[in-house]
Image (cartoon, rainbow, N blue to C red):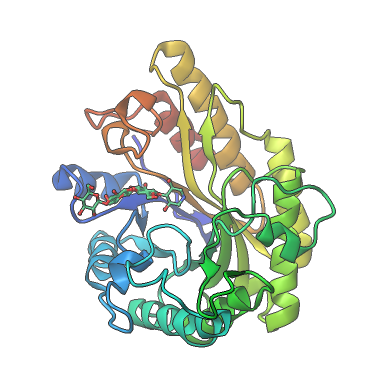
Amino acid sequence: ILQNVSTKKGQAFHFGSTYDTYDADQAWFTTTFQTFYKHVVSENGCKWDATEPTQGVSDLTECLATQSFATSNGNTFRGHNTFWHEQTPTWLPGSFTASQLTGTIIPQHVQQEIQGLGSSVTSWDVVNEVVGDGVSNGMTPLQCVQNKGDWPTVTADGSGQPLVTDLSFIYAAFNTAFTYAGASTRLAVNDYNTGGQDAKTACVISLIQNIQENTNIPYDRLAIGFQSHLMASAGNFYTKQELATTFSTLAALGVNAMITEMDIEINSDNNANLRYQAAIWGDYIDACLYASNCNEFINWDPRDDLSWRGTAAAATLFDSNGNPKPAAYEVAARLQNY
Ligand code: G3I
């Protein structure tokens, strides 16, 4: 029943979820990633703490194992992520100057990961969650990024200078990624609470333009990942129209859009909530299907009991017994009807 499409008007359409080698119930993963999900991203195995636990020493074991899980099931694979202020290796928050970070540490890490995973990776989240949550309309890309309160200060010269005095650390990540990625691998800025006509979405759009202007990476190799971690109670989701407007703004630039981490916390899986969850998921999958520049759709955690939000959030497409929920049937129907 839950067969999904893997093409969209002649282009590949990558619909999938997360996997880690230590996830429970591997047999369920194999079955479900052969029938419903067809695209894989490592939930944790490709992050900096897992892939470079010792400075300069590459350890891609977990990340490659996730890629192998994908290929063994005939699935495609995307990379998450080569730069994030969270889940960094223990050696990182050391006393580095900004120029060491930009000149050596980031390029070395990005190269080892992207080169190691090879050219078949559909896309990489090159930088993850670099835009602040307190941004306002009209901010420059630098102001958007400086607004992020999580940047470590750089203590090398004892002055505690903030890391972000310019965006060269982001250009370094993207330039390195572009050098080593496959010719059709898309390079993304990935963030949450984005997708509509709001200040944070405006920031990620102006940031991707700024990256293009400062790296000359062709626009069609660039992407914005809209994580889409939603909470029914908070109503932090967008309408199909709002998403379509944002996606078409990016299409006009030649930039790709992708839904990268969708889940919807409903907090109790009664029928009304499950139908509500299904309706929102249907809007999001349609917004992506019917946009010319949206060809990847990742659901974060494939099953309620495996969700980072906890089982009670009932936030995913399959219940804790591994059975499809109304949202899974809704999405399958939209995929099949497309
Ligand atoms: O690997 C250790 C293990 O050795 C240890 O025994 C265990 C208990 O302490 O912790 C394990 O690490 C955990 C890791 O997941 C792997 O399971 C960390 O504590 C835990 O914090 C980490 O959570 C992940 C979280 O990112 C980290 O911020 C979630 O699984 C993951 O779903 C979540 O994913 C993020 C995306 O990468 C970016 N967007 C937001 C999204 C949700 O936070």
